[in-house]
Image 1 (tube, rainbow, N blue to C red):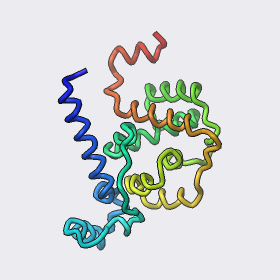
Image 2 (cartoon, one colour; image 1 turned 30 degrees about the vertical axis):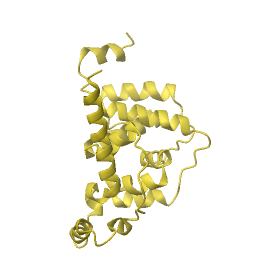
Image 3 (spheres, one colour; image 1 turned 45 degrees about the vertical axis):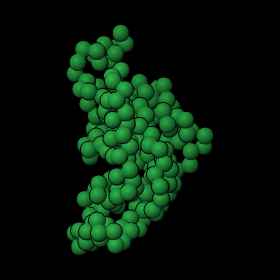
Image 4 (cartoon, rainbow, N blue to C red; image 1 turned 120 degrees about the vertical axis):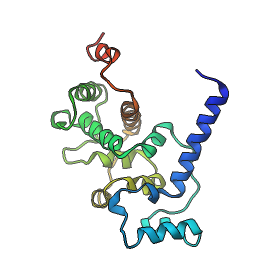
Length: 197
């Protein structure tokens, strides 16, 4: 399990990363949100404490909630992991159209889609819409900056109704976050699991 002080230090660092991201999510924004005319000025104003920069991006200042470990991992994930996460959600919700995934990911998605049918999925849904439905509005205001601006603005025009699927959505995102954070799938243990051993 590890030494208790190591676990305490790891938790403290996770909480610090969460608080830093919560306070200034635009520092982690997708390039689409970083208008070169304004972005640099806003970052400088934020550092000087002269202006609440988040309001420019539609982020209302508030205290952060306690971080969910899965959500924290998404927040600090590199862009490639975020993209993989959305591709996995798409592969789970629409296994027949998941062409961007390798064979191991496809197998995993098909298995999960059988175990976790989501009645909220529609053929034209962006998987990012499922992320928005999973998290709070205050968290969405921040994490949306990690994705292309036009994509976010388009999906915000039409919110997704959950119809009692919150627990399945929670399971879906926790599984996907586990998957994108898992080590390489080329080892024997994964091969054994994928084949049902």
